[in-house]
Length: 437
Ligand SMILES: NC(=O)c1ccc[n+]([C@@H]2O[C@H](COP(=O)([O-])OP(=O)(O)OC[C@H]3O[C@@H](n4cnc5c(N)ncnc54)[C@H](O)[C@@H]3O)[C@@H](O)[C@H]2O)c1
Image (cartoon, rainbow, N blue to C red; front, side, top):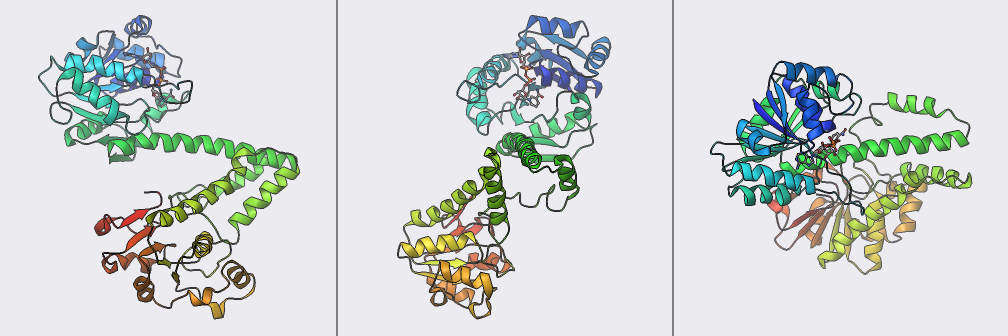
């Protein structure tokens, strides 16, 4: 393919060099005369392992050249990758001014071009940037329509500096966000020589992926560092702890616990986080990340409660009372907290949970339930039908598979509050809200 790459910094230089080695014909564009000159001399404009050699060979074979003339680059190519910087503003906001100004240059060039051209954003931009900044700027300056006269897509970059070239050839994934099929397929064919899981999705999901990835990576570093601080104070070898931690790919390094939903609860997680936070405090350790876990969890419980209160409807039926399906353990179940606060506000509530039978509950579990809701026996119903009959608001509190089938049984006057994503809004559009979706 004939490709123009806008911005010849770390991402643009690596992308230009590597796409050339895949056989594409690449024109790099930067307003820095120095960077353009370096590329045209076959030299890397940034320090990165093997980049000098790659760019030298690509320029030598005529696969790669550079210019500061956006117009010339657009007219000579079929697809542009925008790799300009998106730094932080002083207030932390993302500065998209370079993306906007490069779009103005590309749009002006597109005005003179009669053939199709795809514009692909590789810079890291917040969800909504392509729809609200990139597309309007391209349309205003070109006088053309996105998706009709030219294509727009998102293709975030996952390279790590220092191993950028090997990451380019073996990325963890290739993510392509595009609305029109043509742009999506063109981006896909850019990487046809690369073996990596490929995901086609919407533009907004592709934009967001990069943030969830990078915030997750940052969270991992901060978490490991805080575990290290507490280990050191307790004279425990932090590296041995984390080596063993990392061997667990079932619960620790896995997709488990990583779907948005309701607060965590049960007899272990809240208790154990609380104990470690208390221990750190007693050792005069400041662990802002680990210390923020319980407040974050409580916030999610309050969000669930607010969703119900804001509907201004009552009575309420709660489906699922234990913190997860398939158990009768009610200790620190967050939905109990919601029920308790609703009762305090005078709500008329019925609860259905197939696994919770008051006569069979014993010990700490029973004590906890009766302390939270002393007259719970008068609220429990023994069938899903009885629960569905009662409430104008139906709250799905845990992921019991039985609750998946409720959509056809929801009346016109009822509203479903889903705390666990037991179902998509589907047929319940207008009568359904999910806590984080
Ligand atoms: N550096 C990384 O490891 C990395 C990894 C993944 C994603 N990203 C993202 O990729 C984007 C680029 O990052 P970077 O580190 O390569 O940035 P960088 O600052 O190294 O390079 C940006 C380049 O864009 C050029 N530029 C700015 N405005 C221009 C314009 N109007 N026309 C032509 N060129 C212009 C600048 O001169 C500069 O050479 C950012 O959004 C960043 O968040 C970076």
